[in-house]
Structures are given as C-alpha cells and as structure tokens.
Length: 208
Ligand code: DC
Image (cartoon, rainbow, N blue to C red):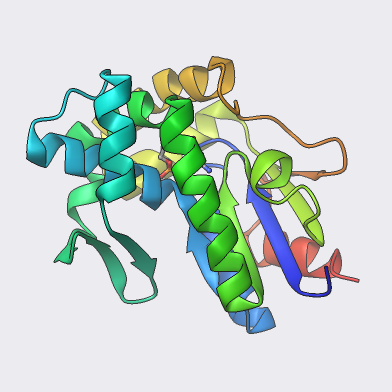
C-alpha cells in the first residue's frame, strides 16, 4: 500500500473526531467519521420503524440505505441528517446497529471503498486499525480518563449524552463483533492532559 491511511480509534470522548479532522487538514488528506455511518443506519431504522435488534431486517436496511458522510454534512438517503444522527435517541439505537456483524460487514466494505476512492485518508472509529485497515500507515489509539471524557461529552452534547457514554463504552468494548480494541501495533496516546494541538502533533509525528 503506498497511500497514506491514518487510523484513529478509541472510546467516546477521547478526542478522536477533533483530532482526526485536524490531522486530515494538516496533511491534506480526506477524513471519514465511521461512527457517523453507524449512526446513519440507526437513524434510518428509527425513521422506517425497523426494530434495531432484528438482525436480518437491519442487515437489509444497511445494504439499501444510502449514506454520505463528508465535509458538507451527513446525508441519509439524500436527506441532510447532520444534526439528526447526534440525538439521544440515535445514540441509544446505534449500539444494536453497531453490534450486528452483517451491518458491520456492509459498513467496512464501504469504508475500504472510500479509502480506495480517496487515495488514503484519516479514518476514525473503533475498529479501523484492527479490522477496516490493518495495514494502515499510522495507528493511533486515543484514551483519556473516564471523568475527563464525560466532561468533554457534557460540554459538547449535554449531561444525558455524557451519562450514556459509560453504557456505550461498555457495549462497544464487550460486544462480539469487532469490539473496541487497541491493535497490537497501534500507538496509545493518553489525551487526558494534552491539548488538541499536542495530540495532533503526536499523530502527525508518527507519519513516516
Ligand atoms: O464515534 P461515535 O460515538 O459517533 O460512534 C457511534 C457508535 O458507533 C458507537 O457506539 C460505536 C459505534 N462504532 C463502531 O462500532 N465502529 C466504528 N468504526 C465507529 C463507531
């Protein structure tokens, strides 16, 4: 692989999104928020009345739902859903969607196509370094003290979302399908006491 792929994984509130976006901008690479893709499938299920725990129905829904995640927003079947995917309702529903192996299969394939189409890029998620792109040029695994992560979430999305973070972390880390995990060759970066710029510098410094 001669394209540059930067994988940023870690739990909610570890700073992934802000860091991934800034790294992409600094290096002139495209950026993909893969969490927004799982959120889009969960939103489509809520909109269409599909039970998120119905594995077959969710797999079909994932296949037929058109999801665009890009610099100009998130569009689900052509509808601007940039804000709608961040609601508490979607944040709850996304756990079942993301733990469905067949939904993941569809998303992982789209993520790999995205890498090919963009000639590399910065991808953030939970399984980028382990599953989506094990051969990534750079793998960063962001962690932060749980209290600090909850504070960051609360500042961004309010207390309810911050409280739900713990439940999601547990679900993401203990699920059977591609759980949140540090790849053996990923560099762990503790962002608890670092500024965004400092974390960005560490990641950029890892690029050969
Ligand atoms: O990054 P986020 O909080 O917006 O992600 C939403 C959910 O999707 C989260 O609970 C974990 C899941 N997710 C995943 O399983 N794999 C990814 N690559 C990205 C997100």
